[in-house]
Amino acid sequence: MSEKQPPKDLDEVILSDDQGNEEVYKILFTFESDDYGKSYVFLYPKASEDDEEIEIQAFSFTPDENGDVDAGDLDPIEDPEEWDMVQEVLNTFTSDEDQ
Image (cartoon, rainbow, N blue to C red; front, side):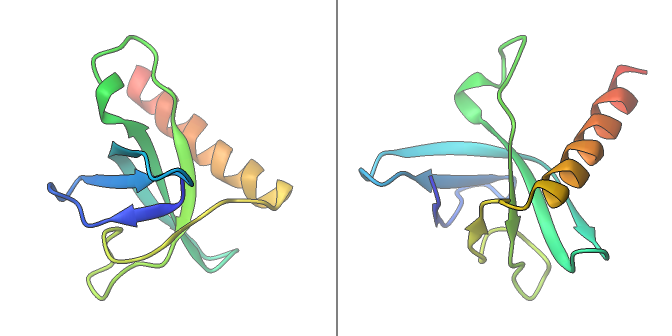
């Protein structure tokens, strides 16, 4: 799922897979990394927001002029060191949420 459609809500994006299937994702949070010079977004399927466990996906993105996710393209995170950094940010976020 890489193609992104304009959101109906500012905290949502619609991702389309290669077969054209669309799914609405909620934006958990975004952050910027000075080390990699990129912006990142964590998303989860809107349909699963009431589930006890949700699958979170992470992408790098090109923000629009307001710094928002909605106008840029989402890119997969392919570098293992970059992925480790992104996972550490998520781990910090989730441990802060638990407290």
